[in-house]
Length: 231
Length: 116
Ligand SMILES: Nc1nc2c(ncn2[C@@H]2O[C@H](COP(=O)(O)OP(=O)(O)OP(=O)(O)O)[C@@H](O)[C@H]2O)c(=O)[nH]1
Ligand SMILES: [Mg+2]
Ligand SMILES: [Zn+2]
Image (cartoon, rainbow over the protein chains, first blue to last red):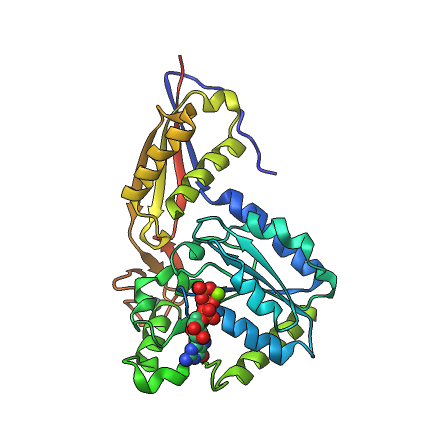
């Protein structure tokens, strides 16, 4: 637990130089999640993007591809509705909605509260679909092994420099809706260059749920990370 | 919104860190937030005022926010670079670096208490 300060006050104004992370309460819970996932050898992936970049569609596609090979489940954060979890359940895997009630990101506490609804011992891969927004979710560690950020070709290709924290803290950027590239003013090269200026270790994959371009590579990446986690 | 969660988190963190009797004497909170933290000082001040409407316990506690700029230190040549336009590249040797030494912080830097 966090140690309490018991220093007695002396003089009139007393200053305590603390330098405590102001999200310490969140990170404390994120650490508990991390330990639990290490114990059950479940790969935990936090999926972030702006609203509508294709997160739920990707969860559906991934489930269709992988559900006969591994056990996967999804936790979905949404401001108000249950729709995304319904869509994912239609593919035959377990999905649970976390309704945030207006909060624009998931916090570790919210994830931890629903963790016991999953049979983690038997789940190889657990996704967290975060609330669609590139700002707030970047600050909240959910105890994930990897953070994957989707950037749709229908969005402006200036996102990495507008939301640097998200790209700095991500491990993988998926350029989604790649099937629309011929019709939109979006340069994969420019966005990759910008994103790598922020984070030179960022992996980049081009993907389309419609034509299935990149879906194989994405699934291979996941299977490899599962293998690593399970040792 | 985001800022409201941040204020809640600050108050929760302080309550974990200090005894209730001491928090009673708290007169000021000093935050240090980097430009990478996505915290907008003006919005945070607004959220802090709004917080007191629902819980007036700390309404006399002042909030000070210091913003810090972005700096990286090169892993190879140790040179410190002021990051501009989010190019995380060493200005001396040109190598990329993720070693952020300033600008990412979200800290409760200092807390003041008044004794009566
Ligand atoms: N052309 C094309 N459209 C896609 C693709 N993937 C998703 N879409 C469409 O984009 C829209 C949004 O997709 P979702 O999967 O709901 O996006 P999301 O990121 O889960 O959205 P929120 O949860 O609301 O943030 C839907 O109309 C999808 O059919 C794709 O690869 N290509
Ligand atoms: Mg969705
Ligand atoms: Zn250097």
